[in-house]
Image (cartoon, rainbow, N blue to C red; front, side, top):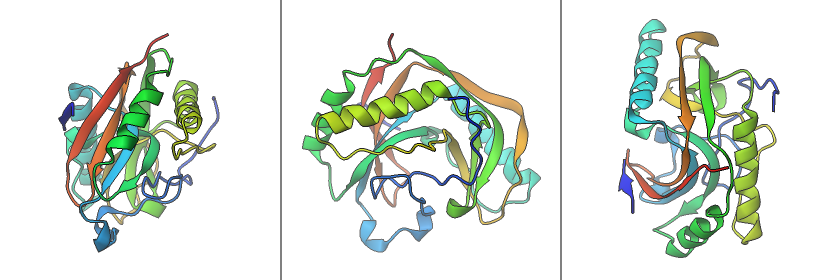
Length: 215
């Protein structure tokens, strides 16, 4: 354990990843999850912003909530991330899967790149307010594809979504928020990606492994 913690226009009709079913389906709001999922683990690969950027993103979520009179609580900064690829949902810690993922990810070769979210969008299927960019990042799409290929190569369940839209969920609310530009974009240089275990029913992440982005 390491701790807890293409130039294509893509719009908000795209749904969020659902890491429990191995693909790019709709993601349920946390309070809508089935009771028998409680305590299970979701494993997924993600980008995690540095602390100052995460604090900025969390503050942006609070500003959006105030501006549009939302009742949902913004997500804590330590849970903010950009999901890349889902791995699966498990009743306990699947050490064999973690080992296989760690071995596969060690072969990934992608240079560092800028993540730039300049607007807020609303994903109606998940009741999620997210930060995103109207122009999809080619670098992040390339990473998404490469991660899927590496998992496929070692026989793991993998996720691939040709309409993958990088985003960061900052809060959940039933009131739609119109798409709008942010006063200050949320941006950082991604220099690594991480394997995260999310325990369903708890606001708790564990970083199981991490890999640097290298040329």
